[in-house]
Length: 110
Length: 166
Image (cartoon, rainbow over all chains, first blue to last red; front, side, top):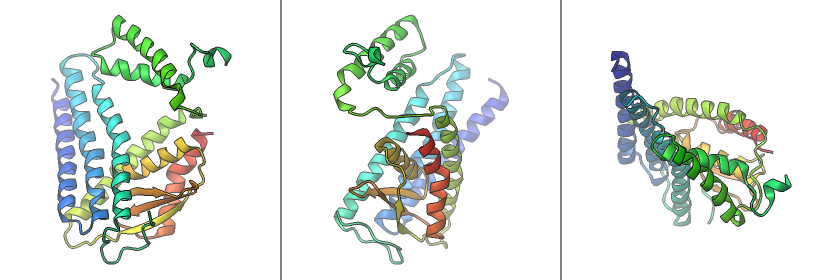
């Protein structure tokens, strides 16, 4: 495999990994339920995106044929991640989970 | 159109195309067999599930959707960096907020696309929709200015979606 391609794959893997790590740290350190809700949706979008994209390049050039299964991983993640985030937010509002101090606006009554 | 909607026709052409493409992606490489099976699935699945799709998703400009996706991917990248900086910087505290977003879109599929896009962009999660489908409740992780945020979402996502969906 060409060196430039290898560098590209490594860069994508590392950025993807870093964003997934940032998502995990956010899940640990953010103050309340609603802000923590943001962390895992982030990790899926760019973290998984980078890793999946690098895997696509690696196997496409390694096997000399276009591999597109990875695109499906992205598509299904993009379809399901917002729905689970939405369900979690609705459940939290229904249970009247505490918000952190200084939150502007109000959740709706369920 | 009658042939498309008949008893053995293609009630949802866009769904059929999507199913065919997904099947090609799922089967390892495009071959004669995968094309035949893909065509059969693209024909039969919409027929069997037609009762679950009461109204046609009215996509007016399918190709606009590609530019929309490019814009969303770019926004996700920029916003991910912002959120990562916020999370990794212990001295910065998030300024969370619930924002009520007035919807101009009417088509249910367009609204769910917008809500999904808002949830995918880091820093915003769409939390709920009002019963009459006119207001969207968004939770924002770190908000500067409410009017600015609403305007950005309107300009970046809602207007293009209004052009894509009827």
